[in-house]
Length: 247
Image (cartoon, rainbow, N blue to C red; front, side, top):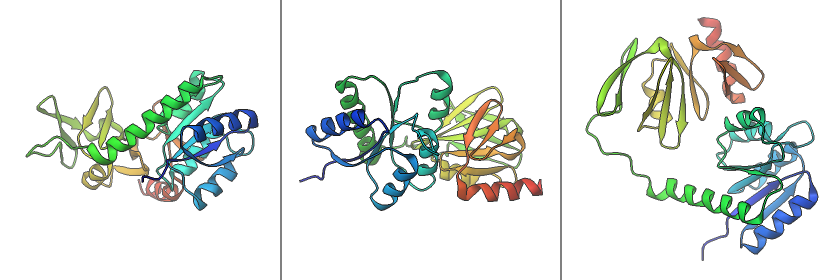
């Protein structure tokens, strides 16, 4: 018999949290806890990692939901489903960086929650069991000292390294964001990291590699390239700062 999916609820409105917990239990999921603060959630996850976290964006306390997700993702690869009563662009864009599996706007119907969880589980199972990369005798990218050749629509396209802003993981793919175009490659971010010239690029997060020369701002938990905020994992920030000192 398969173990039930474990779900942690991080929500500071206790009536909402209790309702979610009751629904999840009735659906056969294992609720590992109901926690009102991000700091407490991080401690709980270290002791008892769940399969999925349902996380309110507007948590009260030292950490809101997005900040909690950022910190969680420096150590754990746990899918996040966000709850939000304020679905404005600012909150959405901050939360989007953490790659949530779903957003649920409050007030929500029970069916919305059920479907979000079912879709998350289906995606996890697909990633784990059914992913098969496209078979090709040629690599998706050739990396030289000053430029890449990337496969795009059955052609190899030259991309100047100085035009690359950053590279983002998308499951078993990675997307190159260049000055005026994007390229989706069938390769993992780790494989791309291994190929790239280290003098130009650095991995700053489990989902991001950045071009050092294109960084515009450095904040506490993220950097800015162009108008895009990119999260920086705490263990990698010191290496980033050291690398910048040598440029």
